[in-house]
Structures are given as C-alpha cells and as structure tokens.
Image (spheres, rainbow, N blue to C red):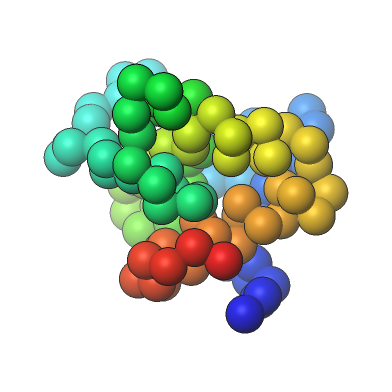
Length: 109
C-alpha cells in the first residue's frame, strides 16, 4: 500500500538544517547512541559483504528538536541508495519505506 510521506520534508537547495531547526545552529559534534540496524532501512534486507551499507539518511524529528538537536540515522544498501539517487518516484519509494519504518511498519513496500 503506497502512502504519502506526510512526515518527511527535504531541505531545499541552499537551505541548511539550522535554517529549518535553529536548535542545530550550534551543534558541532555527533554523539551516536545505540547500534546501527543490521538491515537496510528501505528493503529491510540484511547488510552483508555482498550488500554493505552504502549511505546514511538522517531524519530530524521536529517535535523532539524543539528541545535538543536529535537525529535518527537510517542506513541504505547500495541498491536502495542507487534508487534514491535516481530521484522522482524511485526516491519516493525509499522515503515511503523509511517513513513506514518510523511508524513501526517493518515490512518493505
């Protein structure tokens, strides 16, 4: 079932994260908490030597970012990253899958 990505907004060209979320204006260090997911955030296939992590996409929960600069990192495999780079509808599928994962839906679209 396809659904719009109501919760995701991409930065426009030339726009910075601090332009949208001022709490990030002074953030200079990343602190990673927890372990990376062993599966691709889009296709949900496990990362392997043949299909390693290729790209990290970060999502910034706006409500939480009113208090502190928080980002959620989602890793993509090479195939899904290529699909993301293709843009258009291909990119939307990847973003829909990440949005679904944020909502607790572990099945890929």
